Length: 210
Image (cartoon, rainbow, N blue to C red):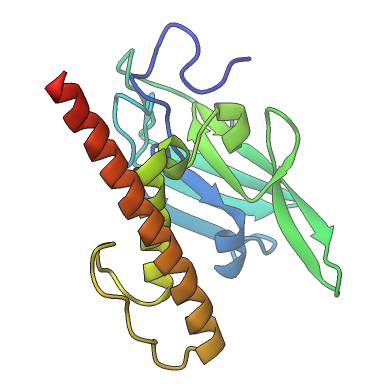
């Protein structure tokens, strides 16, 4: 079986983990949705586009019983055929023992059988690898990738600035050594991003002259 986008329907770009609706088992566990007889409900609107998601879903209801997460999808419609569809309604949960006691729940992917924290909905719930989904940063290269990494580091420093802004001050309650380590890494990445951008600009300018 092919991954996401295989078959007669072709996507114009590689789908990312943000294009499809998903279930996160760690979040469900924190919400006590994995205790015997527990029920959980969620409305889904506006997630995924006809270009990437073949399925329109408005609501999901779940109930946990005997190691299975039973779910019912409301108003599921095939976006190609414009007809209602019926989905499989069981996800198996495997409770794995933790190193220091207790157990951790993991989904069992219905396609590959591997244990996963998150499953994505594409006619049925599957893991990221089975659907061929990527993270947005995996499609980035050069200066774009460096800029993405710099913004992630700035976010850790509670700063939403651009890579050409001044280095952020130390956040309250952050250890001085942690701050210095993050600042050093940020300075190196932003310098590399600036160099990559200037190199790209020079290449583009050279092509114009020729």
